[in-house]
Amino acid sequence: MTHVLVPIEVLEGETVSAGLMELLGTVNVTVLGYHVLPEQTPPDQARMQFEERATSALEDLAEGFRAAGGEAYTRLVFTHDEEKTIDRVAEETSSHALAISGAAGEIDSLLVALSGDVAVDHVLGFVEELIGGRDVEVTLLLATREATDAEERLERAADRLAGAGIAVRRELSTDRSPFDALLEAVPGHDAIVMGEQAPSLASLVFGDEPERVASASVGPVLVVRTDPAVDG
Image 1 (cartoon, rainbow, N blue to C red):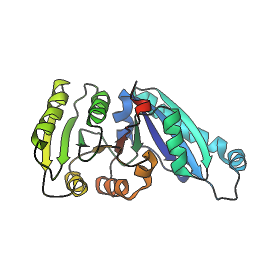
Image 2 (cartoon, helix red, strand yellow):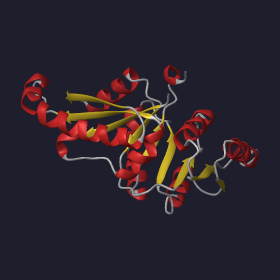
Image 3 (cartoon, helix red, strand yellow):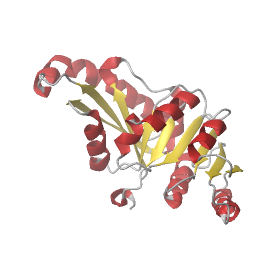
Image 4 (cartoon, one colour):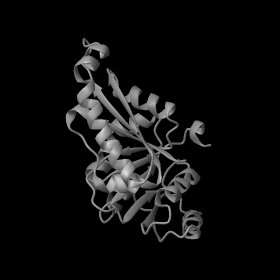
C-alpha cells in the first residue's frame, strides 16, 4: 500500500487542509508531529512538558485522515534537527512520498512535473494510486531544452495515465528552465506532484525550490521519493 509521510510542526499550530486529507484518502499516511528544540533543551524534558498536547493534536489529524478512507498513524518527535528527523522517519515508515501541506479545498486537478532527473515511472505509479479512480484531472508538465524525444516521452506518460482511466492534459516547454516552467504552470491547479531530485527528501521540504513552489501554488505539494528501499 502506498504510504505518505505528512510532517507537521504540531506545537506551532500547523494543520492539514480538508482537501489534502481527502486527496490522501486512497493511501496510508503517517502524520509526523515534530517540534524543533533549542540546542540546550533535552528532548525528554520537552516530551514531559508537551507530549499530551501534541499527541492530542496528532490524533485529531489522524482521525481526519481515517475518515477520508485510509489508514493513519502518528509519530511524535522532539528534535534538534528537523531535516534529519524527516529523512529518518520517511525511511522507517517506507514512505513513498512526502506531503507539504497547504491550503486546499476540494482537489480536482493535479500538476505533475516530469522535468529533470526524476524517476518518471515512480511518479506516474504514485499518481495512479493517489487518484484511485476518482475524477481528478492531471496535467503532465515536461520542461526540457533537449526537445529531441520530449514529445514522445510526454505522450508515453500520458498514455499510461489515460490507460488507468485518468483524464490527462500535456504541457511541453522547451524555452525556459524546468523550474520556471513549473512555476508558470502552477496557477489553475489544486495541488502539485513532483519527483525527488535533491540528495535528501527533507532538503526538498526546507530548500529554496519547494518553498517557491509552495508559495506559488499555496496548495499542497507532494514529493515522490526515489529511494529504492520504498520501491517495493
